[in-house]
Amino acid sequence: MNRQPSTIYHRPFTAAVFFLAAVVFGLCVPVLAQDSSPRIVDVAAANSRADVLLYARVENGFTPEMEKGVKNGIPATFTFEVRLVREVRDWPDRELINISFDHRLEYDNLKDEYRVILGEDSGRTVTVSTLAEAERIMTTVDGARVISLSALKKGESYALWVKARLEHATLPLYFHYLIPFWGAWDLKTDWSHVRFHY
Image (cartoon, rainbow, N blue to C red):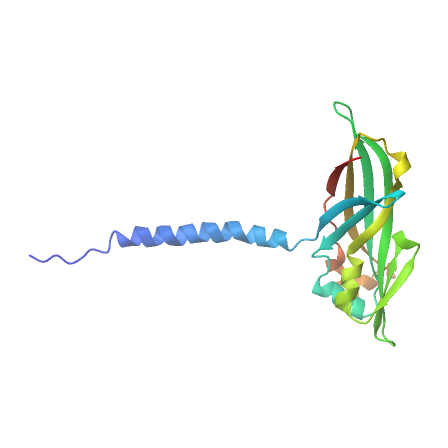
């Protein structure tokens, strides 16, 4: 007597596969969303003959809305906050420095060029022809002076912390409601740090 194969046992298996796929996809979505958020990466401390220097980069620092705003003549400013602490075992860390500096991006529509003003470099202005290059300069801290080496104690451990937030120009009251991409400029990173021994 031939029996027809039953499909009763296949339905729970199929349902289980779909359930597992939904769970995995559901777990992946927040991770993907988190990956697109701005953050500080590549933090490094170095030194010149006289000073401690900071290197860092903001990843995912620009959104399409921000790029549109810059092209429409709205300046963008990244403010970098920097802290240097001396780490003392079994004692609270001692803060040695707490500073901030800006990177400001402006677009000149007549010349079709971008200007980036670097606050940590005495307001030096870098002019470039593409938005991609302007964004790279805006989001990169390339050897900013933090503190003199003479202020450090040899044989001690230190931590250099940095974070960034995006500022935008202040508009007249209620005017920002007329710009659809204005709310997308509220960006900031968490603190990132690097430790070093002097």
